[in-house]
Length: 102
Image 1 (cartoon, rainbow, N blue to C red):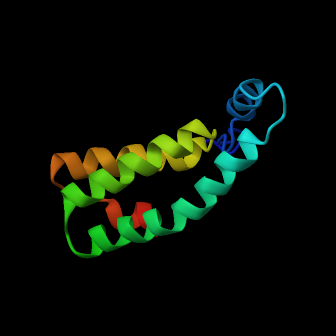
Image 2: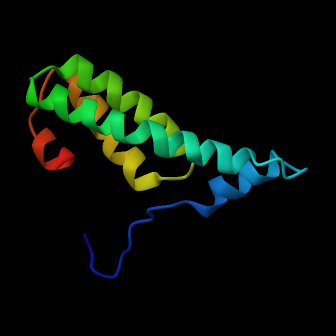
């Protein structure tokens, strides 16, 4: 990676778009974030377990689910890692997975 380039970790536009879906301020964004924070640790654990157990299909399934929720909230770096994990799992390979889940 070029030292002058910075990776976008959180896309503020995605959060702004979600705020726009809640014009009356009922707490939609906060609720979605709470759900994400509750669901993410078990998903990460499931991804690690699938990698450790050499189960590429399970890895792909868990990575897919986390990829989607991360992207919805603008967590682009996490979504990109999950996209790669999903692709590796669908290909039936675990080559490179340990580095991604470390």
